[in-house]
Amino acid sequence: MWDLPGPGLEPVSPALAGGFLTTAPPDIGKKLPLKLVMICNNLVNYTSETDIDDRYGDLDSRTDSDIPEIPPSSDRTPEILKKALSGLSSRWKNWWIRGILTLTMISLFFLIIYMGSFMLMLLVLGIQVKCFHEIITIGYRVYRSYDLPWFRTLSWYFLLCVNYFFYGETVADYFATFVQREEQLQFLIRYHRFISFALYLAGFCMFVLSLVKKHYRLQFYMFAWTHVTLLITVTQSHLVIQNLFEGMIWFLVPISSVICNDITAYLFGFFFGRTPLIKLSPKKTWEGFIGGFFSTVIFGFIETISLYPFQIHSIALSTFASLIGPFGGFFASGFKRAFKIKDFANTIPGHGGIMDRFDCQYLMATFVHVYITSFIRGPNPSKVLQQLLVLQPEQQLNIYKTLKTHLIEKGILQPTLKV
Image (cartoon, rainbow, N blue to C red; front, side):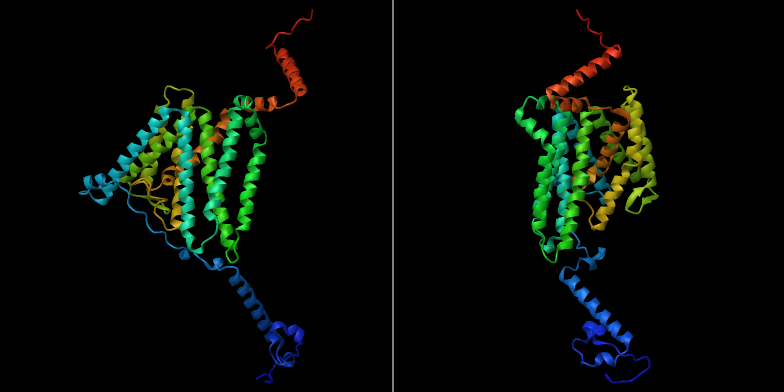
């Protein structure tokens, strides 16, 4: 077979033939066509590269259809509601369950508002942790068959680190005067960012040490999953608390606007919906979207009718909540469709998980923070004072003299007479 003559034969050296000739007769390179040898050699190289890819993981071959389906959540509707609504169709049964649970949640929310700002902060923190848990659990369920080490442990560790950083920044910004009275807190605030970075580095090193051969790429995917989850939940909840410190009204009006839009859009869609709005969420309709928009803007106007000029800001917030806010829900719908799940969890009967209720709230919190910093708030006096108090006495005296001279020139202070 090796001696068959034919057109195009050209002597080939064994060196050029490469790995293909390692098991062939010694003179085979002189009797094969050059092109045939090069093709076979490339095939050998491709096969070896494929073996390497197989050796280090087959994740690249996975498609969306290969993602394992997450088992549907169990129904947690109270038995008393099931019995009371047993005679209704599934459509109306779901309507009543959603309505009753919505009124219950709104009542609890007003109760927490009555209890004060500190309880609201704890509520935001609790919602943040639950949302983080729901998203991380989806990742763990999808990839549980790989038995990745330390995934959940490191995820919760990074959550702790990021919360330490953000809440420390809040304390430094808004409680500077109190911090100056406590020496231990002064040390923690002075080196807060270094401590936060050191804590993160510890988790980073633990992740590197946990890397397992054949699952490298998958572990980096899950590392990114954790960080994106932190970005969505922790960063946004921090902005909610920042808005709360700007005044209770900057907390209540945006949240109530999103709640109003959710309820009215659902009602308009339920009774009048005919035209589908977006493929990501087939139950959303144009009738619900438009009805929710007008209802929310009217609600925002009436809600702050006696608070002029805040009424202008309320209309801007209501417009965003009804036009752009729903895209947070569409984003969540796309995420759930990617992993073949109906809800993030089954925490609230008829509603799904906590994340299902707060997908639009997180987007709204970011807008409110940007709106305040762009159009409302100026420099932060607490932060300026904090920076002044850590200066050396000579530097503080120089700043005092400069500020005094400036105020005298402005006519705010009277110049002192020298005797």
